[in-house]
Length: 454
Image (cartoon, rainbow, N blue to C red; front, side, top):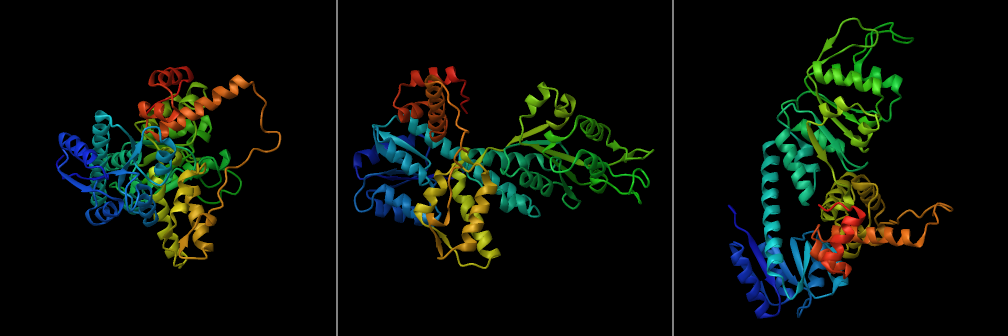
């Protein structure tokens, strides 16, 4: 590590602290702090801002869970690895619901600890690189402020944005609705040499095909009824800038061919035009569909896919980066407290726990809307669980299909395995512990069900 890496070991057993110190020193940790109880751990976390904390759940004065709750209520949780008794999975999962980075069981697996430290060091390096990138693009507000996240997946995306922004490379962004695809596209434009020119978004799913062509390419006077003047399209207006083609998977094959020509030749024809128009436009496209499957089915042109897919960004859904939820919640809290002129300053630990345990099918957009509503109707300065009437939508009557018991069991197994892998960050040994099965059994079932492991 080029920069210092500070770790706090909080455990009431001197022998445990000594063991962890030795492992940390072997891992190249430059500074190690110690705390024998939760109160001292809390004080050191606030005063020393360690990069990583090993926190025993059972400690005198203030236990580890209380430390987590207080930090969660303040919105200032560092990367914390909780230490639990072997088999105490419910406590470990509850701690992770409060914002813990991961958990360890006693007795320790030395290699597992070293892997955790290595991962935390890597994440710190990513964060520092991202901060450096954001500092290089003072004009790009979205790049500096609105792309919020501390998860490894989001840090890697932000790093990629900073790397590709200066070039004219075409970008394809894939992700579910509400994950922030347009925000990423705006960040790329804002951090590029084109930032002084226009960024023009076009929602290909919201505009009928007959209108979408004129929206993109413009039209000549008299080319159709009502065309009383020559009107430029988005590609022409954005000359020197960026066109963002959102939900490009909904574009017809005939229009796809015309977009392909723009990418290949930088030219197009207005509707009713006789002379080609030449433009210098960067194209960023996005879709929430499985574009590769659409290519295989003939619903999307393969040549256009390859032209767009020069740089691919996959934005993970919010449920796959839960460590970003709290940071996003505080970001939106500050945003809407200012916008609505409300004195709302934070969340209770129980409110944060509720936000962390919800699946967020609408992703970041749904989280933002929930925070906005809560701030607008808040009765106190701190938001409580009652301010978030979240509930998973129940199936409509008649929507529950009757399936064989064996099939239902298989589906339940698949879901539980996926959830355990998500909680463990893809660590199959930890996932097997959560499920209380052997590592070999888990590996067999992963292959049997074709579950993808990151």
